[in-house]
Length: 206
Image (cartoon, rainbow, N blue to C red):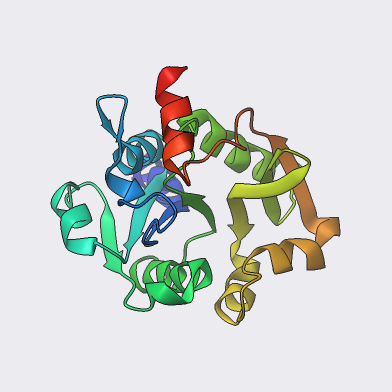
C-alpha cells in the first residue's frame, strides 16, 4: 500500500502543454500537418512529450482544428480547442492552462511547448524538469540564439499570473519580471522553427 501511495504521489506531476492553434499564415499551409520524420511536426512533438515519465500531455488546437484533431490519438493525450486562436499564442497559453487546472488541479508544474521546433526531444523536456527540481527555481527556460524561449517550465506558483496576462508579450513578460527565479537550459537547434516554406525546405534537405 505504501508503495502505491508513493507512486501515485508522483504520477502526472508535470503537464506538457503543446500550443498548436496558429494558422501558419507565413507557411501557407497548416504547419501542424507538415510531414516530418515519417510523421508530422505536431505528432513528432507529441511523441517526444509522451516519453517523459510522470507527465501528461495537453494539445491546444485552433485553426484547422478538424483536420489536425483527425490525425491525433485522443486516447493518449488531452485535446482542447481554442476558439480565440486568432488572438495569438497567449490565448492558447490561457486555454491550455485552464484545461490543466480543470483536469489536474494539483499539478506541480507545466511546460509550454510549440509544435514547430523539429529538434525538440524528450530529453529537452526532462532536462527542464530535472533542473527545476535540482535548482528550486520556478521558471526553467530553453536557451538558444541569445534568448530564452520554448519549451519553458513554470512552477504552479506562476499559474495565476499566467492566466492574468494580456496583450502580445505573452509568457516572456513573466520570465523578464522574475529573472532571479529563472534558470536556463541550453537547447541546441532550438532556434530552428518552421515558419516559411524556405524553413521547411532547409530542414528536409539537411
